[in-house]
Length: 108
Ligand code: FES
Image 1 (cartoon, rainbow, N blue to C red):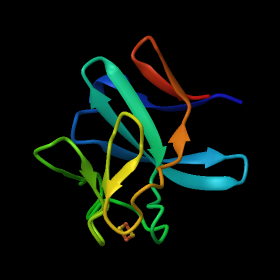
Image 2: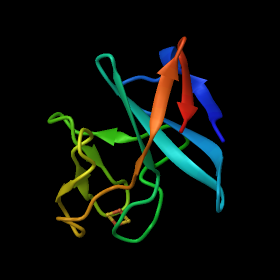
Image 3: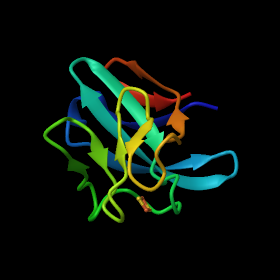
């Protein structure tokens, strides 16, 4: 079952958070823009499973472009989801398959 998440044009480099209904119940995902590309991940840090943002729709993005978990500073590459530094280095964010059609983002 496909589910609409948002309009693609509302997603920025700073990221947005959305609540969606998955097969196992509702969960939060985060969507980021890199140029024309959008990437989505579960908003759950591999370190302790906490959401990475510090306030609604507010994520820490370093000058190097890495997403930094607001709780203990784990730093993630947004293209791969890999944790490059911090307490869960070597683990990864859980990627969510999305697709964009007519400026609408859909959960696959
Ligand atoms: S919960 Fe993200 S670094 Fe600890």
